[in-house]
Image (tube, rainbow, N blue to C red; front, side, top):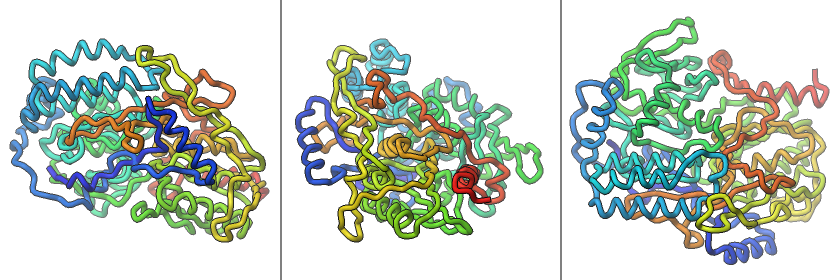
Length: 549
């Protein structure tokens, strides 16, 4: 097990809204609107796996020796015993009950996305509370809390024991199931999900112990398909090692399929379809003796002429012109720090200075941040003000489905008049008449979701890729005193709002799919050749639009 200091954990959240303090939120929003500031500073979203590489790693407590057989070959009862043993007893039963009750009650009274899921929340309390009261180990209790959160199917709604779910890194004998393979992966390879439930290797360390190469496909383990295996382990309630899971049905599945490498320690052999030969090989997983970290996993291949962000040090936006074309390209990996100005500057330089014929905006990986941050750059591409989405919250604590208005669509206005060039400081009303290709994927979450949804309002825009996470709600957080505090050893939050498109106030978007115009994703042949399938498809469309042959 590896451990990092608690202070090195990073959270990302969108613009804050708190149930019970709507007035304060509206005041903050009004002040932001009057000042022209498109965002309110807030903490970051999620737990960043890169902290496991760059954080202060301390000596871990003594843990049981790895069992003689892989966890995947055990019976469910044997795995449950391994979970009980690995982290020990933990806090007292009274403390566990208090944590359980606080999370359950908070969801029951404030969670705003019961629409679109089939869950009997009260029955879950009746099922799990007696088990906790009878005495549950630390690992089992963490698994119960993880499972309650998973059933909400929302990226913003989590309950994680920091020791079990964050500081413990998957490895031999560690009873954890990986979820969300973005940012960092201890398998030494970055993987993405294919439609058949297998995982495609698109980046890998040289001389990988299991012989993995770009274009290889992880079919499963021990002769069983990976999608079937992860579904069984999830149903069995094995504790999770989460970054986040998707909110839309397709992104939920994607986030577990892509994490195939994070769970290799659970099984005896990895079943791989080798790209170079087409043969299926069965490689012993014990050749991996510990975590190997591979670069940064964003589900994007390198594009000639366009540097990628580095993500750290507020480097969330990079841009350039694709080699051999007059097509501009912008990466936005998050909406924090300088990203607001950086995105607006990229749009200005490409469209108003370099006068590109077409533009690609890549939101396939975007961890969110300031909710209103996308508006400045997107507004520069719009020819007229466009209302986009509205937002509601729970009407009462006793009815899961009755909602009341929080922000009307007129608040989220894609407005070309509300944009000024960062460099010149002048009020301008630019617009862009060229075609815009919007690249989306499950790695876009929170404000990353909002930016993608709002970008669909642009004239001459077409989207390519997969659905975003569709985590279109605002979570509990400390900024306005709504933090869901389960204690110093826990990270928890729930979504307190839900979003609807203009003209459809009763059709909430959480748990729906992003309306991708052209569904396309990375393929084994393309990644083996270093080619990005999604970008290539978007480039062909752009070239048709601008008449390039």
